[in-house]
Each structure stands twice: as C-alpha cells, then as structure tokens.
Amino acid sequence: MQQHMLRLYRLVPIAAAHDPNWDNAENMGEIVVRAESPADARIVAADAELDFTEIDALPAEGNSTRHASAFRNERLYTVIEEPASAVAADGPRGVVDGTVSVGTIKPTQM
Image 1 (cartoon, rainbow, N blue to C red):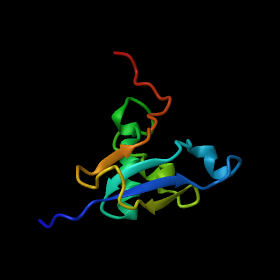
Image 2: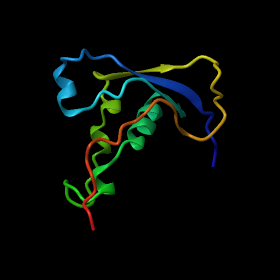
Image 3: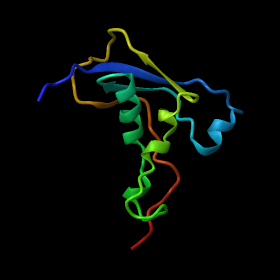
Image 4: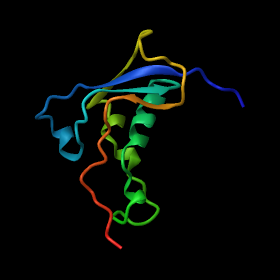
C-alpha cells in the first residue's frame, strides 16, 4: 500500500456569526490537522467530532452524523495549507492544534 505524504492544513471559519448555516453547526474556531489533502483535512476534522453512533442517542443505530459536520461545509470553513512551521508535518494523521468540541450531548447513564 502506497503511503501518502501528510501535510498540515488549517481549517478556518469563514461564515459570519449570523449566517444561517451556523444554525445546525457549532463554530469551533480554527484547527490545524495533519492530512493527505484539503479534502482529507475536512474528513480528519469531522472524524474528531462526536458522532451520534458513538453514544446512545438519535438517529437510529447505524446512521452516522459525520457527513453533517461544519468542517465539511465549504460555506462555513475554508482549508488553507500551512507553510513549513514549528509544527512538523511528520506524525500521524489527525488534529494537531485547536480543540474540536464533542458537543453537549451526553451518553445515557447505565
């Protein structure tokens, strides 16, 4: 399997605070991810968020909510490739800087 070179990408919110696209998404500010491409950077950021399938909540079992992430919405976030910086591109694919909120959803008590 061919291994792709990972680069650093900054995801930056671009929509105004009053933009209706934020009605269904949380603005988590800027984050930096290590990914294969700008499209992969959106996936890496979305994967860092809590998914409804990881907790006992709607939607029904087997339905993922990752595709609904604000990071995947080009009207909410833009992706900028980072120049060589203090944060090395070497390392695993994932979030490098910033905080991805897990939301306010709480798993049910057992």
